[in-house]
Length: 92
Image 1 (tube, helix red, strand yellow):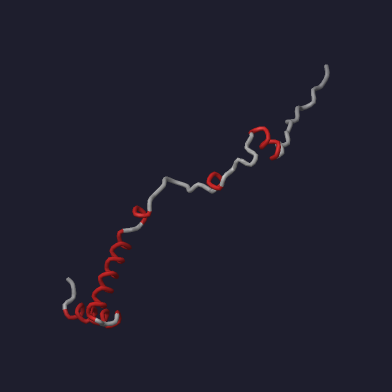
Image 2: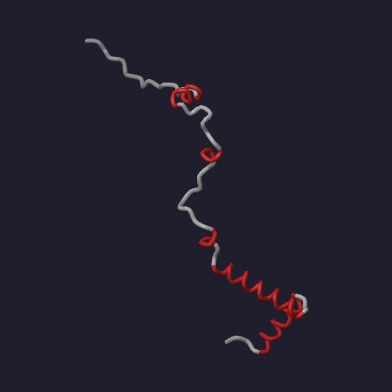
């Protein structure tokens, strides 16, 4: 009876990139759009990503700048007036 040699797995070397390109016909067919990385996750638009607190803040800043311009005062003066009014009649 003869003894069998244990089988060694045969590892094949990966084909050269140029060979793959030739075989698949993709040599030089890549454009900038296909090579750009794709974002992960589901696509979202800018409006959905903006938190409501940011929208409220932007609105308040716009209103403040409008008030400052109309009354010809500085932002510092505006903030001082707002603090004084708040200290006189605080929110409950």
